[in-house]
Length: 255
Image 1 (cartoon, rainbow, N blue to C red):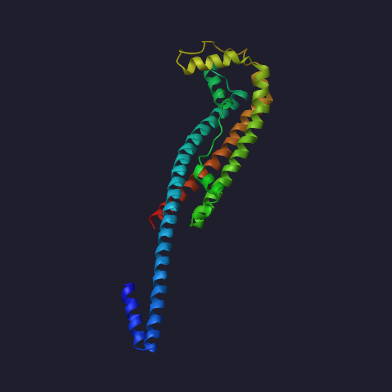
Image 2: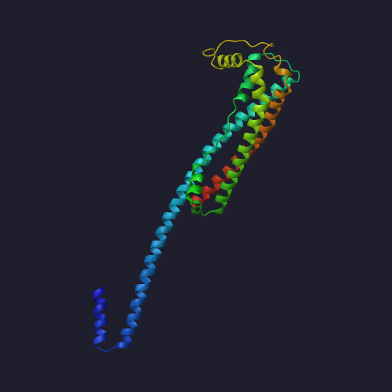
């Protein structure tokens, strides 16, 4: 091809056909420019495809994280709903309802004393933030919803920290100073393991004599029902937002 162009140029020059040579030269320049533009466009398209593949990879990982979080949120909501019911039952006993089975009553409190914090699985979002790659997510709705979920998570952590302080003051401290924990824990372990662990240590009314006189302990259970209800509402909001975000991500991946 280059030899052909060279022969044409030589022929035009040797024949002193300068006007045609000039037109040819301009046409050759245009062809070169067009070729460069085509090459650049192909290169840009390849880069765009690579960026899109990278974005889809991140979106799929975000979706995986969201599904794991939804399972965890359901798990924690279920547990904390049960703990609210337990606390309500305990409060009724503080207000005069007789305790018919002290071993079963003991299990109601143990679940509350040993509550656990919720930790979000947001590895992909953190990776995007730390690497400066959040901008690779082209859909602003996805980015904004991720940020909103993160904000809700921080509010939930604040609520958990606040609750932790409340029960340390109103449950842990008075119970630790008032009760020998051995009978409580032995009875719980024995009951939960169907007698294979712990000790069969029947609890007595005398053991709980001062327990039901403590306003601080009662307030601890009242705060449990209130703050777990607040946390459940926050987790429900996070779950609903995550479900909507999954739909948005699915649409974005398919476009």
